Length: 282
Image (cartoon, rainbow, N blue to C red; front, side, top):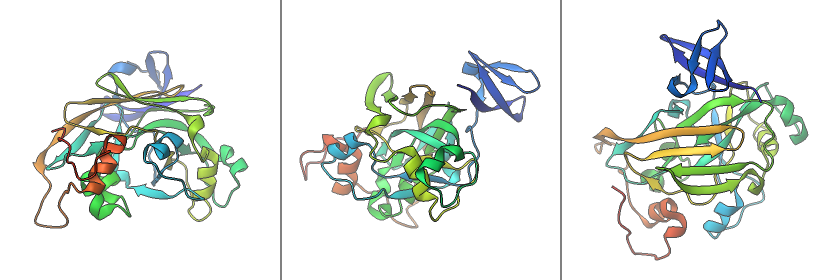
């Protein structure tokens, strides 16, 4: 399966093709994939993400799915890349990983049927849909700061074409420990369905990204943690969590909070006792 990566090479943005352990530019220059300075594999005009889609996560929260998927938007300023640092702002404590598969649009599409979607998909990549749940009390509807804060959308390492998404494993690791173990087969709504659903009213253009949901067991991480998302056939996306140098300003807007809504979402199935405050992962 062809894989394309965007890297920074000799000060310039360069598109490369992966050949084994090497990334090869169109002018013939070669760089080891492990040492390359990666950029997001695509430059989207928008990033759209589905809320609940994996059945294991639905079961974890002891809820049910509605008749159709619902979505939120991550601004393009949240983009990050393979090897990039994910910043947890000062004064925040509930930053969660969410390993996912990302669909990348290849042809402009609007008002298409699900069976037409594959012709409009360029390929797939890996995403980590980080969530800053400290702002969930005020942004639960829009998810703007929860999911859209700077650095919270790593994509990569590359764009893989001709990838069959059926029956593929999706696993997340924190400091080498397996923390999420899912499959693309547990999605309630398939990738083609999601593309067609969004394209009913929103024109999708080449490079646009659609995040397709995460399995059970999204949990908080802290500065120093290394988070890896591995998807069968797409590779492994690696990022390190770092602490922001300054706390979130408190002279404007809502402050980070630790309500039951925040904690129950951040801790998922590890939050069985209402009203009992668990220790922070500082």
